[in-house]
Image 1 (cartoon, rainbow, N blue to C red):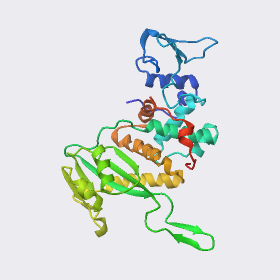
Image 2: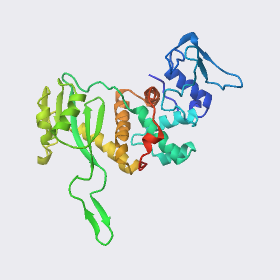
Image 3: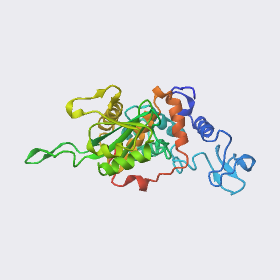
Image 4: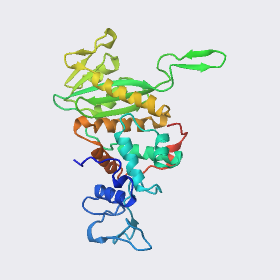
Length: 318
């Protein structure tokens, strides 16, 4: 494990120290060309007046590159030490870190901070996660709703209550007890959606724990055991059968969304879920400290690009 470091470490304050740290994480065996994959003697470090420190030349494809290329930091004019600090702040803030606070902390514009935050979340996204659970392992599944309030103020009419959860955004979360979390923003909550989500993310030899919701009944038959608690009758645990773990995850997620982010456009909700999943799946209880979490975010930034055009849309997220 990487030794933990304070925020006063040079890599969070100095560009050269930051570059060397990111290179050591991305290129532990020496620099390689992000365009053609060549490494070794064919990759030469450049210097002098025409090229600053950190530039490399590939002898095969003849292209120039830096450690930014082939990552979410590509084509960004923000200093590398600010990128490192942003990653550290996001991976170590349990309930999130707002773009407004990032813009004040780093001394960059709010627009840059907003876009930067989304690129950090992209680095946190796990592209090919293995299925959760396994023999004798418990996976808890539950759903929650987030979005427009249950009541809105209408001029001349006062507070008007919205029926049920029809206008809210639907989230399904799967949490392996003592392990990782995986969450999804879904359009509908029905047996077909639940079955697809479970089949793609949970091993069938697992024990599945849910509440009494009817949409879990048929998909639950595909697992080694499907055990339920009946919340409508005030039953929250029966032996080791409970959904308290996944509800604890929802508690952290909702406190972050309401207290830190406050507003989130529906088109961005999955990115926020990826952020909270990353921190939960790399938490201290699993032996991952802030420094290691930052290293994993740097590695997660590889092979990903996120453009402002793709991200912006109707920008509503904090």
